[in-house]
Image (cartoon, rainbow, N blue to C red; front, top):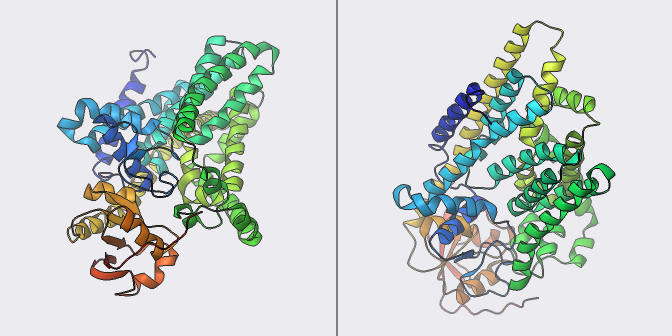
Length: 502
């Protein structure tokens, strides 16, 4: 893109990079399990340890208490980690691993307004309307913290939007565009597992005479990229219970059990299963609407209806609905805990581009100053929501982080068993093992096998630890100290592992 010709866009990009840098004052640590995991493994990759983890965040990565270090990314996808590692290698020594990895994310995030602008222009929006869309997407609203998070949001947003842009050309028969679209599907899959669903759009291209070559070529490239990751996982021994932990959950906390859910346990709770799916359909619909502040839905729907014959718009609508249904119905407990919000990142910039085009068309009969008023209102609205979202992130993640840092000073030496192993591994730098959701007996086994003598329970803990959290002493653990609701227990020396494994 000629930045001289589009100097306003260049200025906007620089301004938004500045906004991201300021946002990093708030997002100064990973914050939550996914991001802690990505950041910790990114540091290991950058320092020559490869895609491995020296902690256990979930037993699907360490079945039967596999010895450390273990192969990483058996559940999550690797691209966000690799992007951060690319920043840590040259800049980690100067900035520290977190900031170096975060800077790499911020540099990729600089492309969000660029691809949004390009998408809006491709959809027929004027330069002014496209610039408005670029500003709105760049600010992010509810996604504002995500645009600087050491997570997969930013790569998904850029890759997903680029896919829809290229897909329009592939649908007109361009084999080169088809190959590029296939590469983007592969990269999106390496970012988020549901990215594989975007490959269905390539199969649709392959079924049309005008775009058969583009569709077939793109599908082969996507399969090659995604298949290489599947080969890696198969060569390591594919987790036996990966699908069960993803699809057969009745309660989310059972995702962290040593013994994964079974088809029998899933079918024995039909009421809970149906209730969870219906609840997820409603919750995720609200999440999607709120990500657009609701007000963008009307121009978005109007623009999509007027362009329903376009391949890129058709693919956007079909994939957005498909991902919503798959997340809500197949992965309900995961989806309402943040998985669906992660998925929306791949759709958000293109949705904003459609809304920008639709807003311009709605206001076409009016005078130009009304469009400027709407533009100013939209930017101020998303700016306000972005600021609010950063404030909420501070409360939700920085407050418990400070409590954990204070508790870490009270820990004895050695490995630890904790509810959020990825977070405590990052904070303490020591071996951390997730406290199995199966309960204290399994925690005792984990402690014995991984040579830990400490169990940490936070106010938010798995339900089978309720009795222990309210006690000072049990047959397995004795309360050692407490701070801000974080209770530190010592493993009693007579502990013996007596549980059975599936």
